[in-house]
Amino acid sequence: MKILETRIDDRLIHGQIVTAWIQATGADAIIVADDNAAGDALSQSILKMATPDSVQLIIKSLSDAAELIKKDKSEVGVLLIVSNASGARKLLESDVKLEKITLGNITNKKSGQERKMVLKFIFASEDDAENLRAISNMGVIITAQTVPNDKAYDVMEIMKKAGFYK
Image 1 (tube, rainbow, N blue to C red):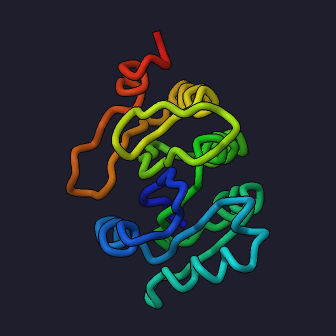
Image 2 (image 1 turned 120 degrees about the horizontal axis):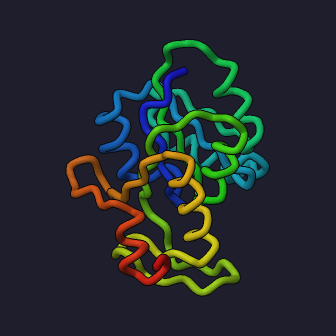
């Protein structure tokens, strides 16, 4: 499989994914790599309902997704979605090769840590900042963009402006 786009978005599959990102990437399949979704039948049902019939949906735990991505040598174009920076980092540490990651939406929901608004659609905690820095240090380009036609922001730069990095 060919990873066409990797997104960090805590909403996983939603209107912007269905109406913009699938078309912009030409993805034939979506892989949701998320331990919570993989273990919750209700979440899986909701994700299936949100996914167009023309697109294959694969919901896997982070470790199972990593194994699938590394083993599948097909030419299927994939939109890979993880819910947070920690999950993206785990995939990379499992030897999944990613060149670029796009932050979609990270809400200000309760996470046990204070979150700071970085952009209107990105709220980050210290853990998020640490994981994003580690991902960047692995040579992965990280941008933030709601839909393909919107401006893409350099995440390391906006995190620095928000006071996370000196």
